[in-house]
Image 1 (cartoon, protein in one colour):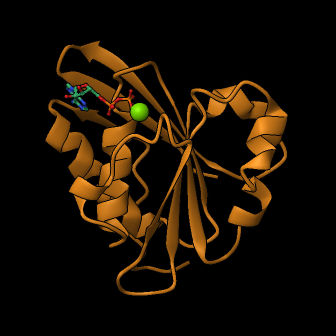
Image 2: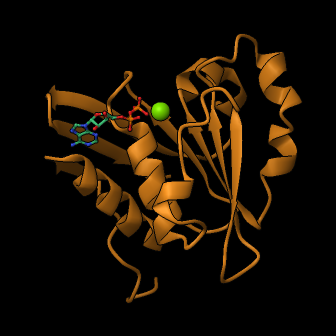
Length: 152
Ligand SMILES: Nc1ncnc2c1ncn2[C@@H]1O[C@H](COP(=O)(O)OP(=O)(O)O)[C@@H](O)[C@H]1O
Ligand SMILES: [Mg+2]
């Protein structure tokens, strides 16, 4: 075991939007190429804010360049430092598993990319047999969000 590996947090309570972004950024220390991350939680629970932070932590894009891809379905952010790409898929408007597979999900999953799927519960059959980092977000009150993480 790498003694210097940062601890993998199992949970975090965020009390404002910036804290969610900052937490996402710290998670990047435990994320590497080939990882697939699922995000589940209701509308407004902070999924896209968390992605902004992860993108920042992976040095893939500035926070301003990351917005919810609800209408785009998938956004790519390239690292400024390496060959790593971050793919942010929003499954909110995906209606069928076929539609999801047509995005080229299988090809996106490679050692040079990190794939994050918002609304992953909508495509859970595709994810059932692969190893994923699972993050659940929930509302505690208007400005507080509970974030729980299951590392593989
Ligand atoms: N602690 C918090 N963390 C993240 N977002 C928060 C928090 N408190 C309030 N918010 C608000 O909740 C909303 C979260 O939006 P977003 O990240 O797009 O959620 P989702 O992608 O889950 O729908 C934003 O309007 C944000 O300002
Ligand atoms: Mg979102």
